[in-house]
Length: 159
Length: 159
DNA sequence: CATCACGTAACAAATAAAGTTGCATAATTT
DNA sequence: AAATTATGCAACTTTATTTGTTACGTGATG
Image (cartoon, rainbow over all chains, first blue to last red; front, top):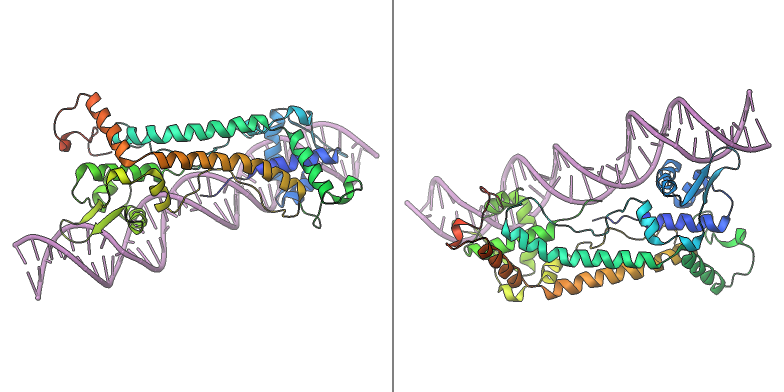
């Protein structure tokens, strides 16, 4: 089964937005994420509803964070993405009266629920600020010493 | 994202096979699972490679368990299903040199790996025998007192 | 008022999963 | 042996989901 990388992608976007500071256009973000501007808008529109980002039209417009990095946890973003499925597996529910199904689902649910709870608990403990700090540490570990504009994009135009 | 219910389904099938004792045909199993016989064969063929079930052709043929319920864990079945994806989320890996991506993926991976490990650990602790016992307890709790043939299918022909 | 950028709906393409068909092979029954 | 029953397997079709695209509307800026 294919994995959903929207959370990873959104974090990527938000951190870049935090680095840049000024509003970033859907176009710029789309190029960064190798996707289409409309896709970016769709995703960020959801985050805007949860007041994690703001958008502005016209010249100089675009997307920017509207909260401090310290106050945004991965869990906030998870919620803003509409609580996407965490586990790739689930239970059959096609034989409601079947006691075999009940026994099976009961056993699986215990495992599934615990795994989900673990993930969500982790999400609550990680802030964007921590990720940003981690990023800066990696940057300095790589011997970087200049200003942002020159080196947050190690490859050509990507990231 | 849609959840894969093959593990749940296979457990359902295996427990029914254990109850019945005699070989069950793909046709019978397909009706039980409301799917196509070929789908059943596809899945069980994988389990056969791992020597969890055996198949026999011709009259009186079909599928049966070829190991004791006590010796089969959910983890065995997970392996026999070719280690299907456990988590519905994964990392973007489209900007290999990007330090932001590195920081993001590092944080997510810690959570993801722990959740996977938790699930797999749970899978190792649960045997088919335990599920079977649980099933029988539920059956008796429902006031059942006769022989198997009459009551493991609470609904019409399903389960 | 021209340009830029988001907002949104509707459509198209790509992917993946599940279901289906057809025929071959093997075992059993008569 | 012949008919029947069942799996084995490959190829194909269908369906559902996700992703990408086009087109046009709205609002802000210079």
